[in-house]
Image (cartoon, rainbow, N blue to C red; front, side):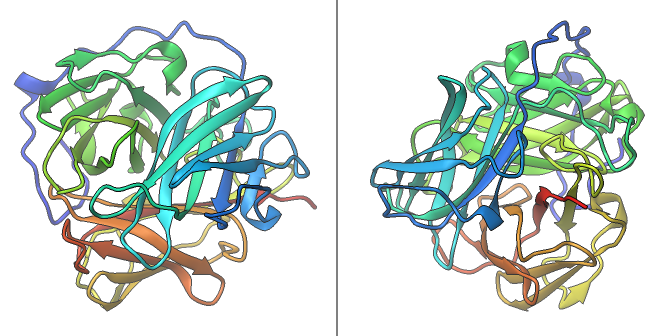
Length: 375
C-alpha cells in the first residue's frame, strides 16, 4: 500500500480491518451547496461575520450569521443551504490552546444550522474564535470545468460500532460508491472510500471530532489499500486529557481541489484553493511533498518553522487577505494544532501543542479556500 509521507508510521493489517468495497450510491438527492465563516466575535450575542472571511455558494451577496447560545456554544446559520445531510468542520482560531468542533448540523427552515462548541484544554466550555464550514455538494469539480475530481466525505454517528455504513445523506463518494468505517481499537478508525483510488494522485484528508464534549480527532495517515482502488483514511480520536476515546467525527477527502466540492479558480464561479501536508516538523523551511499539496491557480507551498510548534505556510497565489482556513495535526499521538492567523504578508500561521498545552513540533495539514471570484 502506498502511504502518506509521515514521520509517524502505522502498520496497516488489511486482513483484520478492511471492509469490502461498497455498492453504487443510489442517493441522487438535491445539491444545497457550501459555505464557510470566520467567527471573530466570540462574546457577541448575534452577528454577521466580515464578508471578506465568509462565503455562501448561493451567491456573493448571501450572508451567513452566528448566534451565541451560551459560553462556547454557537449556532452558525448558512443561509439557504437547508438540506439534510452533508458534513461540517470547525477549527479553533487564536493564540491559545482552545479547541472547537461541530456538535450537530440540522435543517432550520430553508437554512442550515451548524452548532459549534469550544473548550479549554481541561475540557470546560469557553468563548473562542473559530473557523467553520459546511458542504453537502454531490459533485467534486476541480480547475478543469466539466471534470469530476476524486473526493468524498462521511459523518460517523456510531463511534462504538465495529463496522458501520453512514446513511447515504451523511456521506458522499465521487465515484458513486458507498463509504464504510471500521473501528480498529478504542478511538481508532479506518474510513474506506471505494474506487476513489483509481484516479487519486495523492490528496488531502481532513477530520474533525463531532458531538458534545471535548474530544478531538486527527488523521494518522491515508493511502491505497486492498482492493487497490480503495482509499483508506486512518483516524484517531482523544479526550481532553489526550487519552484515546471513541468519538463521532466528520471526515472529508479530496484530491486536486478544495474540501467543499466547489469549482476551482477562477471564471465564472471559481474559488482559489490550496492544501498541504507539513510533514517535516523540525525543518526550518522546505517544500512539502508534492503529492500532498495543491494550489489553483497553479503554484506551490512553502512551509517554515520559527520555533517549537510555531509554523507558517505560504502559497504562491492564494489571496490570504480573504478566504477560509482549516488546520489539524496529523500522526498517531495526541498532539493538536490550530490556526493562529492568516494574511498576505505572514502566510497561514499555525500553533501546535501537546495534550498538556506545551508547544510541540508535530506534522500538520491545512487547507485554504477563497471566495467566489468574479471578472
